Length: 196
Length: 196
Length: 196
Image (cartoon, rainbow over all chains, first blue to last red; front, side, top):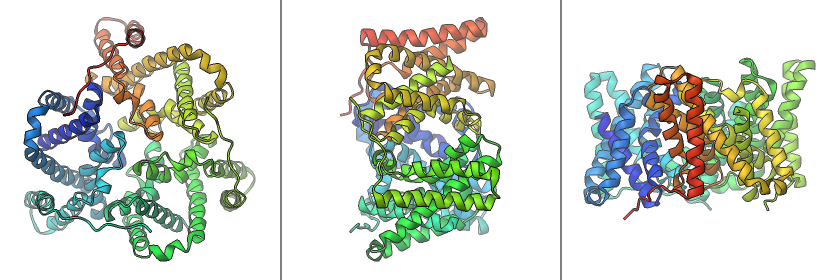
């Protein structure tokens, strides 16, 4: 499941980079950063080094493979946008919960863990946008994205008090994905905050 | 005092984000990053992990509260620009000295500690500008900002040789704030460096 | 040799910053970030903290001196573009191999070490471009830059199996520099990847 999330994020990064007409190397690197960015920031913040993706070749090879396949089959993949939206959403849910579990395992406050999970889920995309010289879509789009992580993560932490871990996990991941999918289908938006 | 600085930086971040018309979540996150960015980069560089703000909920709650109040009372706060300039300046001085003290406590060279203090004071704002897709104002504006930290921090390190710590601290913070305030009042600028 | 690389990178960063008309402080900082950025990211990722440049004043003083000299003699230096291209290339080769050696010394997989070396060589420039609000030239330009690091680094890891370390080192650095120089002379480019 974690692997599915990694693939989805690598593909989404590679797509964004191709739209900006980067070269081959740039597309692969942006895919890489999108896939490992959130987890890397998490590991650096909690001092879990060398960071996770450096410990063996599995993750890097999966990401490079996904990036190359994206480049080769980009015409075909564009017809599968819904499939990728679902992958991306699943990755978001999984990475959020993984981040929270890492935080809890080193004894951080649950509120901090929710922040850590949200960082794990969302900041790969933030790094991608920074490298591509956008204001991160996360902050600008008024989409329900991080909000889904925060709600699902909070429920997970409360759920752990009354449920076995696996049940809380499935519930929270389902909730994050459900909120995200409903938000996109029903076009929910966060309130705008106007400057003067 | 540290709390005042945190609040001032959170508010200044939230203001900048509102000017770019980010959504609610974006405004809060930019406020958060502005307030904890400098200290987080410092902690990561010296390996002080989990980074400081993750250790309990005090700092995150203060920042979120400040961000929300900024959004609610933005009309009112705009009339208090001078108050916030003073808060921000106080935060700058305090964070710089805190950063230097952390560096000295792990035995780094005083020159490095001044750099570390300056990073602590200034890089929250640099991250804010990078996320908002500006060239960081710090580098572009020719304002005396980091320069005040460097001068005050250097005086602090020399001061420690002849003064008790508290006296050196008060002197240096006063100096940083004083230079910054005078620079703005008298419109001091760094020399421009022209390209060809 | 490492010092030459540091100088070259500091100068290249200061040049880029002067083209954007930053102030004195901005030019020095961008030079600094370009010179230590790659090594700092490497140290943070593998948990080697405090990061290398913080351990004594040698590196910071060299960088600040290089930055100041660049500002003072910029008219003269512009005539030496080829000299600097060669310095920069040498720095690229050296930093890549240093990064790989650090990775191998803590027992990482050689494939990961090549990535780590490439990060050490290239990411100072990426940070420079992000601070100056560009899409990093590294990703966009279709130049053979990181590619040279990856090829040279891979050869280095294989070379270690059959050659003494020093020979492998000289071979790999020569290869990285050779590929880079030939690529520029002969105008080699990576294939473009077109978006739809």
